[in-house]
Structures are given as C-alpha cells and as structure tokens.
Image 1 (tube, rainbow, N blue to C red):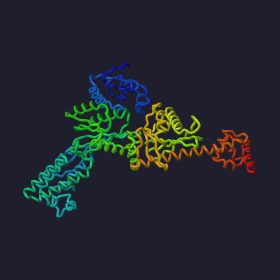
Image 2 (image 1 turned 135 degrees about the horizontal axis):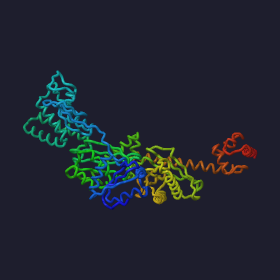
Image 3 (image 1 turned 60 degrees about the vertical axis):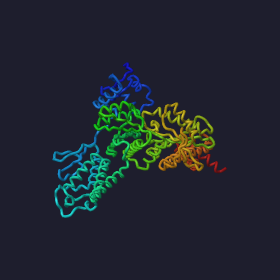
Image 4 (image 1 turned 30 degrees about the horizontal axis):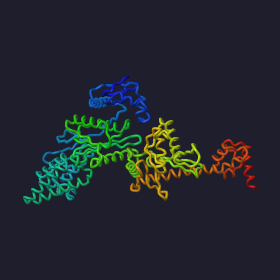
Length: 598
C-alpha cells in the first residue's frame, strides 16, 4: 500500500481484523515505514506488535492537530491492545454536610438521598479525608457522630485538648457554631491562602474594637492553619493550579505519577502502571491524552518532566477541552523542576514497592541514576574485569547485580582468545564484543545473554571505556557505559565516562553499591584466573604420562579438582574420570608411585 506524505491516523490490525494499535502522524508514509524498517532499536513490545500486524488502514485529515483529536477519539472508542490505556479504577468520594443549624462535616464514599448536602465527587479518597480532618481540627468541629442539638453533662476529651468546642455540652452557641462550620466549608472550597487573608483581616478588626477574646480565637485559628501548611512542604506559590507529570522507567513496567495542586496545595496524587511501547517522549504524549480523556478537570498549568512529543499540539488540544488557555511546561530549573523531580521520585518508589524492594536498595539505585544522568534506575547492571599474570592466562569475569543485589546465576567467565600477551584494553573490547554477539543470537528470549543490561560498569578508567565504546557503537548497542576508578589503596574513588570523573563519596548508598560491584567483579575474575593458572601449572606434569593428552588431562582435573587428589587416587577411583580406561588408570597410578621413589 502506497502511503501519502500528509497528516493522518494509521490503524494497525491483526489476522482476526482486530485493531491492535492506533497512531497519528504528520507524514503517514514516514511514520508507518519506521515500524517495518530495522527492528534493532525497537522495544520488545514494538517488535511483538509489528509481528502481529496483518493489515492496516489510514484516515487522512487536514492538519496534524486534527490527527491528534481523531487519534484520541479512536483510541477511546477501540481501546487497542498496544496503546497506553490508563484505567480509571479509583472510587469517588464526597464531603457530606449533615444538618442546617448544627452542620456536621464528614468524608464519605457514597452519595445517599438522606437530606444532607454533598460536595464532590472527588477522585482521591485520601485527600478528601485529609481535607475534612484539617477543617474539623482548625475550626474545632465535632467528629464524634452525635446529632445536635443534644445535651450531656460533661464534654469529651477533644474539648479539653482544644479539638472541639463541645456543642454537646453547651460550650458554644448555635450562631457561633454555624459561623465556624461555614468558615470550615469556605476553607475546604477555597484553600488556606484565602482563608488566612480573611482571618487576619477579621483579627485586626476585632483588636481595633477591643474585642480581644474574639481576636485571640482568630489568632489560634490562624496558627492552626499555618501549622497545617508547615507540614505540607510541597505547597507551591508559583503555580496555584497545576498538574505535574513524571514517569519512572523500570525493567518491565513504567509508572506515571500525577501530582495535582489546587490553591497552592497538593490535593491529589495518582499512579498508573504501563508498558513502554515507544520512545518515552511519545509515551508521555499518549499518557497525557489518555489521562485527560478520563479527567474532566484541566488546570491552567501542566508540568511535565523531560522532553514531550507534540507539546504545541497538546497545548492546543487541552485549551480547546478546557475552554481556557492551558500552558504545558517542561522545566529545566527552579521550583517547577523541583516539583517534577519529586513527582518522578514518587513514581520510582511505587515501582520499587511493586517489586518488593527494600528502601536502602531503592536509595542506592536512585542515587546512581541521578549521578550518571540515566533516564531510568539501573535495575540490571553488568560489570567486567580483566585478570592475568604478566599477560599469561588472560581471562575476564562478568558479574550481574539485579535489584541492587548479586545475581549469581547470570555471572559469566571469558578466556581471552583473540591474542596472547598483556593488553587490558584489547581484552575488554574482545569480551564485550563476544557478549553482545551472544545477545544478537538470543535477544528474542529476553533472558541471560539475550537480555540487555541497564548499565555497564568496567573495572578501570577512561581507557577501558574508550576501548569498548567503538565496539558497542558498531554493534548498535545503546547501553550507558562507565568505568569504575580506584584510589591508591584499591578502593572505589569515582566513576568515569565521557563527561570526566564523577565523585561518588558524597552519595553513601550509591558509593556502597558501586564498591560492592567493583569488589565482586574483581573477586570473581581473579578467582577464575587463579583456577585457570593452577590448571595450566599442573597440566604439563599430567601430559608426561603415557596416554594422557590435553582432553584426558582436562577430564582428570575436572573430576578430581587438584593434582594432589589425582596423586592420592586408587586405580578404581581414577577410572571414575570421564574417558579414563583401566589401562590408562594403571599408567597414571604407576607414574605417581615412581615419582614417590625418585
């Protein structure tokens, strides 16, 4: 099918005719051809989708913006398997105001036909409960569940600790109580900022007319609100109304966190898990369109961490949906960036919790991600080291840390085969080339050598990094690559890469993780070297025995582990080694007996 170079929406279908993906493009031909070119840089999910495509259709439109609008509409209608579809599985909650003369404010999960007034619905149950609790605390309203008016002889504990004005014991008039309840509702609807302005003005007026008792009550109320605001350290002055979006990438799943600010306060936090099926920039575009297809409330400001595809088109789309101007910001510094980074850390923490991770491992991987400027936390790290004795028995070890812990079943050993002699740079380049040759053979499995690491750390400085970089570039492997630098006492000092050395001593958790990696890969590679060197030392003696060649010597060492064990073995025990006949066993036994007599 010949595609035009015009804006439109493309619709991919499987053999059953089911729609499995819908996308929009500025130039249909260019966008669709990207899927069916080289799959080297495609995510696994994209490769699987392309494999399932049996047919596709397209719809031409007049502009790229029209394509975006149509794409959103069709995705909502057909819910294709490979599009990012955020599911709104949250319950709604309400603020219930029961009673007219003695209003009681509470948070509820359902709206009943009981004569009470309801404010809502709200998406966040936790936020509603927290807001109602704050309002009742500041304005000293009852939370005991009693119906007023009622009269008891003595108030409960809440009265004595100044959490309630005890209308049940007649400690407050109905008129004063109603004023407090109305003020609490104004606080809930308008937020603390407007309430503080009004209360300060009332307090000044009360003091001027010498009503010091009233002024003192208002002072206490102001202090109560300020105390709540002090606890809420995420209050923002720059954007009184904004939504903040950030994505944390994991090995299998990603997490989107949305922080919603209203009247300068954080009022809601939502999390959505999804699989990354495209570039992160395009994924964030899909996330925003999917999210605001679920949510009717759109703020004037939207903050997104990191580059975002089709930012101008999204602003236009959100502005039309809201009916007022919407600004999308991708911050580089300042308060907005602080909020966006906080949002991303919350998303990363949710991913860690989903995987059952402990806090110290989370902190180490997060610190390492920040230090190295990685897009995602490095869940699967491969580390390499070279070991030899003056160029002989040249070997390398590869260790893997998964979830911040050694993953020993993935460890691998390499004997250097491409040359003899001492050349650590050349050795490292050979090992990485062999490793990623295996990846090309097994990448469909997604396991073992078929899995790409999130980070490669080489035991060595910039020389090792520069030796390996051309290899990875030639093979089309795009994995972050760094070296681990030691000090004069062979302790981890820094990480090195294209941007120079990065000191890690100040980041305790990351320092501990990298030190553990460096120690472990050194231990593993030098252990393999000693093993190989020991065998090389003793094998010439075995080769002196009549009938024992390289294969038989290797079989004996594999079976007995040491030459000492071979010397002490009986004829019958020697026959237990693979390929050792009775006659050869007798030759070996007699050889060492003669050695003892010499």
